[in-house]
Length: 82
Image (cartoon, rainbow, N blue to C red; front, side):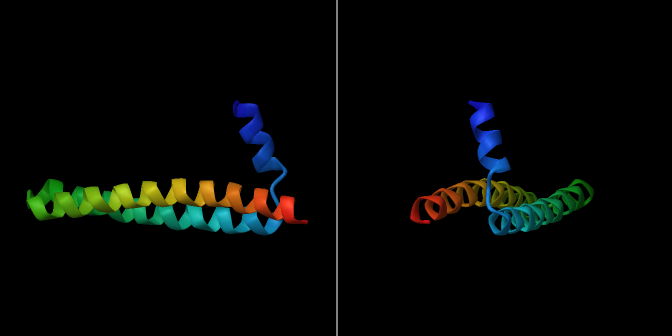
């Protein structure tokens, strides 16, 4: 199963790989902001900061999964059309 997914990523079109790479960078940046907010929560103990940090971290992880799934879907559709 993992070999199939690895082959799909290796055979992906360059434009899609480029968008996927920068999408993952953006998602990791969102996760880093969330970690910074959670570290700030450790110092201030404000419940609002905890929920903001946790929600932002979940959003960043969701973006990573979304970019991977959409990249696979777009690449598959492009290969079927052309």
